[in-house]
Length: 430
Length: 176
Image (cartoon, rainbow over all chains, first blue to last red; front, side, top):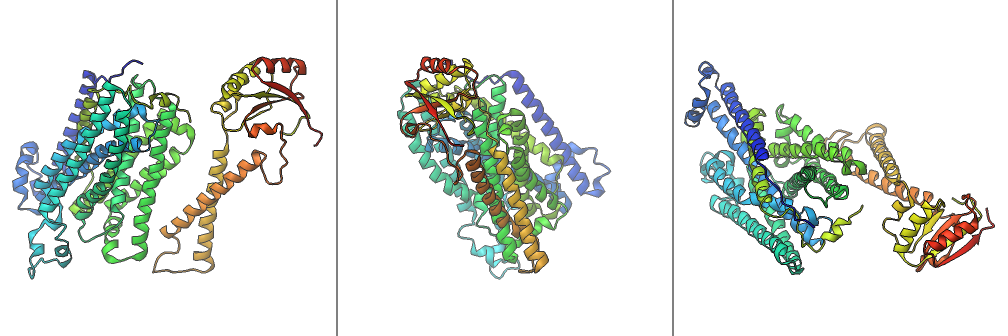
């Protein structure tokens, strides 16, 4: 069998770069639009927009409107970084699941989710930087005066969570999650690449063990990361489902991303082993975990709805009683459950690239909106919005993410030629 | 399914021989009535030229029936016949989801199993024909219905023998 290697061509890089520039332009236009919409008195000299934007940060601290655009940028940075960090993490998790399940069908496509892991260090650094810069604006619990007993803003509930929610421990956890994830990713990657050179089944056996270890670590850390990064925004609210909920959202996004990249690589003439049977399996994953996400969604919503305890239901009140967020609330349900459920139900839909190329992007955008809905109402209240700023920033992140993972994908052979189950995968038939 | 009375059976020892034989026999113009094997043989459906099962359509129909039934039942019981206000909630709401989900899955599963048993001639009151009891043990049995074929019995016997059958036996049924 010939060794396949992904060629990250100059023209593809150019296309990504142009898309990225479009994202930057949209983002700048979005920021200007928010600033002009925010400060009415400044509409007159809004023409000097770009220069003005740089000043805005210092300027905005005074007026309430001026402050909203920078917070909106912060919130979007957080949404995108949590979203793409999740996709990267799911890549490693998917590889680990395949090894632990000793799955044969996925042998030729495992390098694609593995490449996602290369985003992890970048996501980790970004997460730390964004938190240090924007944490105070995004997370209510970071405000010192909440903990001053007898003070005007003393909050007994938040003060009671101080043992867990305090800045040093929070940052330490963040660093620990990313370090563990990254080290496991490097370990898995090292063994997978060593297999290419030496070709004994020893590496495969070892990988089953490493992967089992990673899944244990992942189970705890992914859930805790969801509490830290998503749940702690709404400090008073609690949901025992949020760990699963964030995981489900991440997992569907990651599966859709893996499927989409596999489809495009296949169309680009790579992955000669992959046929419609493999795509069928990937499609099944997207289909099944869209249902899983909906199941978790209902599990969270139904109990809160039925019990109707104010401190729980406030989360959904903020979203459903808002003209801004209520439409997103329903759109998310349609894009992430009803659409993939009906579109991917038949066997043929999962085997045809046409359907996968429509459903996967819809699901990925839907889950981005899901994260938008988790973060924005708690951080921006009613001053949040959806416009060019959000779209531009998401495009910038997506392009950078793609650039990093495609670049790393081009560095190693695309198919693990010594994978002990490659032969089985070639005859995969369902 | 139970049409003919006179059959010829080719008995095969090996699944690879069987798969090749199915292709050869079909290309020789002989119509195969059925193949019995002790375990599922991969690729046999394709070799026999079977169309894909339409069972998923039945599953969808039954599932949809379950959805409708669940919503109608809950709507009638809790909103029309005896309106129940529980915890100040609407009559019809997201609380219907669990029951709707369960009934959808239940009817889809039961309907699918039932349909499968009926179309596979395995319903409880069915009297399936047993061609060669060894097909439940270690032999693959290819059955050719002589009434379905225009080719003569001698010719079919020759084709079966050439395709690698270890034995070729006639079988007659007097029922119907």
